[in-house]
Structure formats: C-alpha cells, structure tokens
Amino acid sequence: MTRTNRPDWPASISSPLVNPIQPSVVYRAGSPDDLDAQYAGETQGYTYAREGHPNASALAGMIDRMEGAEGGIVTGSGMAAVSAVLLGCLQAGDHVIGGDQLYGRTLRLMQQDLPRLGIATTLADSTDVGAVRAALRPETRMIVIEIVSNPTLRLADLAGLAALAQDAGVLLVVDNTFTTPRAIQPLAHGADIVLHSVTKLLAGHSDATLGYVAARDPELRQKITDLAVTMGLTASPFDCWLAERGLLSFELRHDRAQANAAALAAFLADQPGVKRVLYPARPDHPDHNRAAQLLGEHPGNMVSFEVAGGRDAANALVRACPEIAFAPTLGDVSTTLSHPASSSHRALSPEAREAIGISEGFFRISVGIEPAEQLVDRFGRAVAAAAQG
Ligand SMILES: *Cc1c(COP(=O)(O)O)cnc(C)c1O
Image (cartoon, rainbow, N blue to C red; front, side):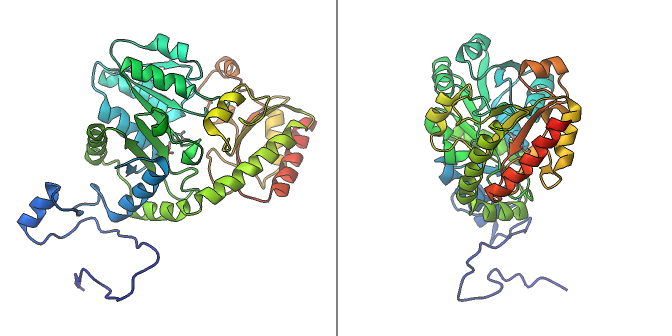
C-alpha cells in the first residue's frame, strides 16, 4: 500500500463543521525555495509537528482570545508550560521568587532542579507584598505566583505584586489554572506571562494532559517557544483536538460548577463536625474582599473544608461515599475530592502542614457539574460518617 498524497483528500466541495485532527508528524514542501520562505517566516506553514501543527494552533488561538493574549503556545502538559517559562527566560546567576503555596511540582522544579542549573529560588507568601519585596535581590528576574492557592484558597495580592514587579523591573508570571480567564485575565492586571494546566478546568474532562503559555513581550514569547520546541515540550494533535472540544463548553461548565460550589460550601458550613469551610466568596474567608476585587462574580469551583478528628475520620468520610471520586486532580466535569495530607502535601512534616492549616481532617473539593441536590446528599452522608468516626 502506498499513500495517495493528495493534499485535498478526500475531495469535497463542502467543509467539515468540526476541525479535523491532523496527526501528521511532517509536512511536504513544494521546493527548497518554498521551504526556505517558510522557515524564514515569509510564508505561513507547518514543517514538523514538534514545531507546530494545526490542532495546536487552533487550541492556542482559542485560549489566546480568552486570555486577551497574542501568540500563545500549547504545551504537552501544565508542567511543560512552567518549565518552558523558567528554562526559557532564566539563566545561571538569576534569582526567582515563587509563591510558597505553588503547585507541588512547580515548587520542586524551582527548589530542586533550578539550583542545579545555577538559578536560585526563594519562596515567599504571595498574599503579602511585603514578604515578596523582602525576598527581592539585585539578581531577581522573575516572580511566579498563582492567584488562588492550593488547597487553602488564599488570594495573592496581585495588584501589589504587579506594581512591585514593575518597580523592580522583574517579570511577573501567573499560573491561571485555578482562576481561569473566566474570572481574571492576568495580562490585563500587570502580568508579563500567563500559563495554564489546560488539563484541568479548560479541557475539563480529564482525558487530555496539556498546558498553555503566553507572554506579552514578543522577544520573551520567542524564547519560550524555542525552548519548548527544542526540549520537545510541545503537544500531541489528538490531545489538542480533545481539549478544543472541551473548551467549547468551558463557560457553561464553569458557571454550573461554581454555582454548585457556592451551594455546597453553604451546606457544609452548617454541618455538625465541620470545623471550617474555605470558599473565596464567603464572608468568613480571610481574603474575601480581595477575592471580590480580583475575581468578581467568578470565585470559582474549588471549596476546602476541615472535619474534626484525625486520619480515622478522614478515612470514614471517603469510604462512606464512594460516589464521590477520591482523586488528586481538579477541574473535571465530575466532582473530585482530595486529601492534601496524604497526597499533594504528604512531603511536608505534620508541623509544616499545620502551619499552613492543613490537618488530617482537611479536604479539598473540585466541584463538578452534577445536580446540586446530589452533591449535597453525598457530602451530607460523607461528613456524617466522619463525625461518627
Ligand atoms: C495541575 C497543575 C499544574 C501542572 O499541570 P499538568 O498538566 O498536570 O502538568 C500546574 N499548576 C497548577 C496550578 C495545577 O493545578
């Protein structure tokens, strides 16, 4: 069997409604001159899938529009996006400041891998601009934050940090995974670079691992893109195609999940045995004023809560309700429950966990799009079981 190699195969006078998947690793050019013109950027075209393909371009363009960005790229995971930013923009001798509640692997990259390459990292509390200012050094090049922290859902002082970054001449990088562009567009709030784990809320179906990154400055954009292409951090066409489909319903899913989250937070706060509930829109949240300012009508779909009792109560809670997926992820169409002490924060000592308010009874919920009554019923049974021990 040989390929027909007809570029218009299959011929059709009509065009598909759905963008096709283009899995081809490589593209044929008409002549050396044509290829030259393409590499020189005089004509637009693809050459090799690691450098770009139509499904990545289509998805990146959609997220660009949501973020008010230009020239963003899709990467093979959220961590690939984080890596492309840190490794593409920094060099030996530089210093970077990270929020002390960043995603676990981001912390690991900054604390364990960057130092091997001669890049120093300091962690600081991103809710407190004074703490970040105190961490600045003459060689600081970058501040990396998430707007809503995991799992305690604290809000970074974005306005203060943007002003600080501008004064100090350092780059401000925002991981917008938890907040999403539905709530906030970091580039319009003084960030230089925005990135995502598209795996989570944007794609929304836990079936594609992807990331996204966009920079305001075209030179920086080029550095990040080159690093991603060179290190092979780019994305597969099929994953991009799945994420494009997921993204089409993102706003609807987000609105529904958020309404569910508000209802579930209110319900949990009334249950005996629930010691506290963390939801940014609640008046008892430590940063609710800042949440209202930054996120407006979109406080999000993440709710954390703490039950009395230790690991036994936590086990009872999870076992009482197998319909709630106990799984360390977020942003799925269905509700997922995670227990930071045994998963994302297991590497910390119990004392270090207590210091940031994570006990054995602490849970984080990524609320999905199920009927609200179903969620209330399930969590009602779960917390009742925990209270019985
Ligand atoms: C999951 C996550 C990442 C990493 O994304 P992957 O797609 O899993 O590589 C980075 N930042 C945040 C905030 C995340 O939740």
